[in-house]
Length: 155
Ligand SMILES: [Zn+2]
Ligand SMILES: [Zn+2]
Image (cartoon, rainbow, N blue to C red; front, top):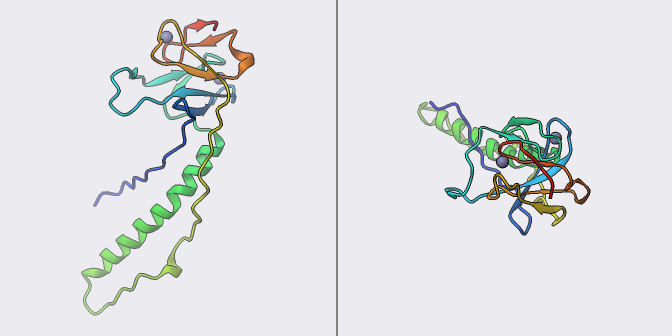
């Protein structure tokens, strides 16, 4: 049996296609451009550099607290369903036991409201990687680091 449970959670992009991120080092927010799946323009990276402080971290270290909350809230009902389905499967093979899916067993987690992504911050393009633009707060454009290689630049 495959023990891995995969749940999908979608996060909202702003109207320019940018995803909000929070740096695990300086804990400031910025946005990176979310390429479509299979976009040949996208740089393959196993780490990213914070545009604001220039410190790198793994590609999955950049969730904002609101996104983590949201992901947990979205994943809960899906995990709940998986648990119920596998209970039903377990009992299916057993004779003389009747299994009735029981909503009372449910972990009963509410589905959260969709996140709203405001169109704030300004777009900057690193000269070294212009295909990987970021959005940073307006007062931070003087000293920015490239998301991909960490190279400092000014917008
Ligand atoms: Zn940072
Ligand atoms: Zn670069």
